[in-house]
Length: 580
Ligand SMILES: Nc1ncnc2c1ncn2[C@@H]1O[C@H](COP(=O)(O)OP(=O)(O)OP(=O)(O)O)[C@@H](O)[C@H]1O
Image (cartoon, rainbow, N blue to C red; front, side):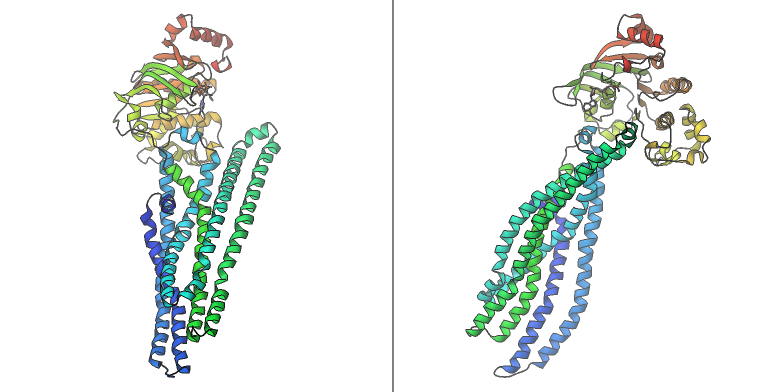
């Protein structure tokens, strides 16, 4: 149980103390009417048995307590409501933020090891389950359990025979419920897996819609989605059918407490060992205690059903974060020393690579498709961590450097630049209010996007769709380039920044890059070799190894891969490594 609480509370078990205490008080208050009714019946009953006395004063006091009770109950319920629901919602909101921050700090490897639907479904379902558990399923069994223990002890001392009648069913029901809870947990895991798979299918279907349409395969894509939905329906029905019916059986058993109490009480009454008044009082209490006992048995099953959600969130929160605590004030160059890296064990993608990217110069990475160029850029930004060797930045191994500190020195333009739903201005400035209009326009002019942005009806305030869907590939790429220029950092990492541009724009952006690289260290991947002709150094990669290094003139003069491909590209005009 304690383990479970730790999981649901993200290892802050104290979170549930307050809600539990208030729920206990609220439940204790709700027992008061039964106790008052019992005392009133008892007091009234004294008038009909020797010595036939009626304590009117006590009856008036009980009535006054009853009235006061209504106010007390209201106040306690209100506070309890705040500490259970209010706290649970605000604690879960904090947990959601902590979860996102955790994801933010994770390397890319973390995401590619998961189904895309897992994180989506965690957000959609797991947090709601945790929220519900924190305000309901955890505090209730603990709070109500405490109340039951007090009742058992009290009734047991008063009349152990009635104690057995009223609570004897409880261990049997709890044992059945534990069994049901295990079944429920098993089915909850299957439902969770089905929900994850369904979310992945929806995500893939929507994201891949363009390609599905292009290949006229929307029907096939839909079929996979439909199958996932059917599986989710079947698993959910199974969970309800198995756990639901057994839970109902158990709840019905608990409800037997009242007739059992009545039968045992009657038996004792006839035997003359229980007074009529005590019999009536026990019956009133039994009806009240049934509610509490029902709550306990239901909670046990519900809690186990929620456990997979708590575990899944806890697992993400417990994931190791990238190492490194050191800060880098201004990092402006990289030095690779015997770096090796693999995504999957046994498949070395980068093999013992060593090179420097001198500060303030343009380094170009070229090579056949799949040779590891983008991987090298990802290693520089610590999207992944290498397994052997060192990448030094200003004398520090970047694995020892805090990721945020490292990234504050880098601007990156990827192959498929992503733009967010919002205005072009928002996408360019990324919330940095210190960027002036002049700086923004200058960056856009350098990236050759100012003219097309100005021609839009709303100019820089034009709203673009999610992912930049309302722009062409080239426009997106130029905006992301301008965004990179605007982030005033010493290092620019560019993965084919001119790939989606036409020849004119490519030449112009190339010029801008030449200018920019005078002030910054630029590391750029290019397939079209003419775009890196003026680079200060060109590194030629093949099968994860650097096989040639030098300027264009040096490499073109050798009889290596670069010279061969330069020859081919010159002949073919636009021939690229990708097609080689
Ligand atoms: N996330 C990943 N998980 C596993 N393997 C990967 C991953 N990303 C890339 N790879 C593999 O690593 C190798 C190098 O990929 P990389 O993207 O670095 O090549 P590249 O030279 O940039 O290719 P291109 O020029 O086509 O963009 C490829 O064989 C690729 O399949």
